[in-house]
Every structure is written in C-alpha cells, then in structure tokens.
Image (tube, rainbow, N blue to C red):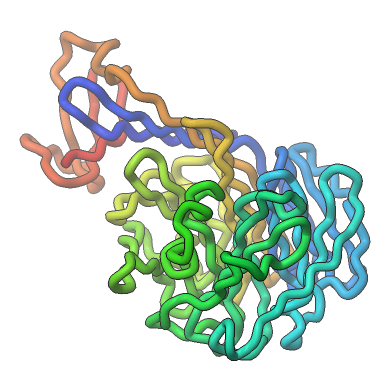
Length: 383
C-alpha cells in the first residue's frame, strides 16, 4: 500500500508542510554488475544494461523497454533537465572519465562527448569513473549544462561544462575543485547543489562550491563553503554502505537523500533528512515500500531529485542489489506554506507533543517531535 509521510516545519502561526508520497515501485531481476546505476525522468527510471550495450527504462506498470543501444556503454548514466541521457563509455579504464555519449531526448540521435581532462587543467590524469551525478542544464543547447565527476584516486572533484554537445573550453573551462578531505574512488558520486542558472551565475566558484559529494566508505555528504569542507548532518537512522545519494534545496533549507540501514548493511531503504540531520521521511516506515532488496554485501544505489516547480519535486531511485533483485521507484515531494492544517481542523484542542521514542514532552524545543491534535498526528520540527 502506498503511503505519504508528512512533516510540518513549525512556526508560531504559519507552517511549511513537506509531504512525501511513494508514487510507485517495481522490482526487476537483472545482473547488478551490468546494471549498477540509474537515473529518472518523466516518470520512468533509466538504467544501463552494460553486457548488452543498451539503455533500458522501467515505468510504473513494470514495463521494461529498450531505450537505445550504445556501443561500449559503461556504468555511468545521468539525465539533464531537458531529458537528454548521458552515458559513459570506456569502462573500466581511464577512458570512462573522458568518453561519453549524449542521447537526444528529441530524436534519440547520439552525440559523442570527449572531455579534455589532464593533470594541468584537472589536477590529475584521467582515471576510472563509475558514476555520474545529475546534469544541471541542457547538454545539447547553446546555454549548456554542468555535471560533476569523481575519478578513482583523485582528491578533487572535476567540474565539466558542456555547450552544444561539446566541452566548453572558454571562460567556463575550469575543472578542478579544492582538495577534498576524502580520496575519490569507484563508490564516490557528486551531485549539483544548485540549478543551472545559479551555477552559471557562480562563475569560477561553481567548480569549488557547486556540488556535494559522498563516498560509500565513510557515508558522509561533503560540500565546500568557500573556506572549508563541511558535512551535512547524518539522518537519525544509521547510514548505509550502499552507494548513491542526492541533495536538494527548498527555500533556504537543504535536504539530503541518504541510503540507510534497517536490517542489514545494504538495502533499498533511504531517508530524507534536513541539513541538521533531522529525519523527515523514511522510505520503509513512512513510505510503505518494503525492504525488498536486502543483502549483506555491496550493492549499488542511485537517487536523483528533480524540481518540477516552485514547491514540487520528484525523487527517482534505482537499486542494483547484490542478489540481482533490483528495484526502481518514484516519489513526489510537495511543500505547502500556510496555516497549519492540523491546528485549523482542531482549533479548540490543545496539542500534545511526544519525542520520537513516544515519551510525552511538555515543552518541546530544538528537535523533531510527534504532534497530536485530536485524532491527527504529524511530525514537527521545533526550533
């Protein structure tokens, strides 16, 4: 049964309510080594079938279809804001950092993208690259697009700017980030922190402050604030060694999407947490999606969030399980601003607060609580 998780971010008279709904999820049996990562767009999840040189899609009805055939396709896959699909080739050698194919959303024509990455402009020679984070912008347009890659053994994140299907080597040709506190490896992924317009407006700062990065090993999400590297607060549930994450900003607040452990070290469970680590949504306990891909060893996960309009987002998940029982899912996130619905419906009933352990709290402060008004309950973040 699909369910929605709701949290009211409390204010004295007004409240911002974040509602997360599981739209659909489907399992699919495929070799996780050949279909490690995925990306979502337009209600579908896209994933690579490396062995058969194909990009595949799966939808809400469980229909699995071939989208395109790409010679030499690797493990990396991402989609830009226009729906163009970006896949890597040359896996598992150094060519996987520099060789890509863009599949047009308009007619499925393919454009070869070859990057100029070397020790002079990126601070390190090309090296194996398994994952690609979201692409901000349009790869095939004059305006262009950004994406960020993490090469094995590098201590920096590489920023790539593309215009008209080619790497732009003008004013925005910069590549190298500041030296990070972690060494990148094949489990590392970088995601843009901002939309395309913001990244362009940042100029050279985009290569240092335009992204967040997570590594499976220490499971922390890092970003550079212009002075030092910082981390977002981890969600309350233990974070998982599964790969993948994403981050998005609504208003002035950032939220992370983190794989978490419910029973074993590697599962399809994830949580949405605010930047301080307060858990807003758990895909298993709040969303109604069971732990269907439970393994005790390394598995591959992908999460990507797309903003639909000012207050609505889509989250896509692909989970390449070690037991080949893979999962695709789509969630929606909606923010509403106004008088708290619970208070309006039960204005004459005094609210009662409980902590997350179920203990009643007389004067809640600085934390996440369960607020009960009459027969209605919601999570509230009190500051």
